[in-house]
Image (cartoon, rainbow over all chains, first blue to last red; front, side, top):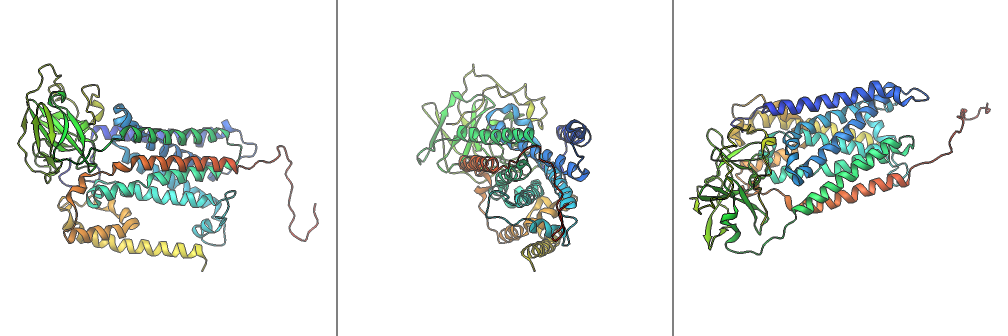
Length: 376
Length: 125
């Protein structure tokens, strides 16, 4: 959690994540740059700049493919949540690798032109009206610019300053970016049929990204209920202790209804940090804990414990014939709502206690098998 | 001036304007619009690249916050409703890129010996 902004909120998990990330990237580049020339046994040795450009280009494509797979994988299977945890650093490193690719390209293919090399990159091919020989460089430039914008706006400050809707809309740029990268590769280097292996890698990567996103989006698709003053969420006994049920309101907003012992409380499902799904987390030490980054809230008023300042909206609840109803009108963030008394079934599994020792910043410690939430 | 030179010049001016906005926002604006940034200076250099790139967005949000505008509920409303349309468009765009790239892929006879090209007006070797 944050009280004041810091460059990076380091913890042990982030150090480990970044160490694996950097080591894997360095290993890939070392194999490609130093070992591959011998394996590939080119008939005519290629220039070192070209080889480096290819190494960083392939690396950036693979990194971007993995990044785009992480989001839907985490939605489809909670075991992938740890990969999501520090994805921003993954994105920043990808932008750096892609920039290095562009550096080698500019300093070899366009460096010996009578005009400025940046100008030469834009001038060299202007056949925008045809598919064969299309200036794939423009697709690469567009993708690089988008990657730079995405990585530059990845600090927590930007989410708060721009607001999540604007920030997320900006970060939807990742999708045209990936499509542009695939176009850049397909209309560029893969026009040479010597690269059959890389052709297969690109095809598999792109199909995997498309399939995972479609699968996750279809699974999340829910029918919105008709507008009503109070909406049924679930039977009170079906909410496990320390867990939540998520309700989707007619507006599309989501509400997480948590049980803490014999009481129920409802807060917005979107974490104030990065809109992580609070309802998929659980109550640890009497606080709702976001499964993405461990941000915590008092379930009765939606406030983070002092000295932290994050807040989320709360909702009113009522009980009728054992069914829990939620008032779809959100209370302003941080508003206290008295918990609803609803004795829980003594045979319902109890989640608290065993969770107290876990690393709250480590989403890998979350156990998805324990009474997970369900959409209603 | 060629179109390419114009684009490069425009990019240069864009970055200079971004530098001016970055100086003003990081020295004055950020403390006025975000209480968590007051007294926090180490992270501010990290914001410079983003301001250089998206400075109109920064000016717009800065203005909105100075005027007290904004919908608090929007902060808790992630745009998840567009996931499916976005996934469909992404899949279509990727399919187009893959098919188009493979369709125009060039083929040429194998084992053709290289031929030296002579400058215009000279006799072929």
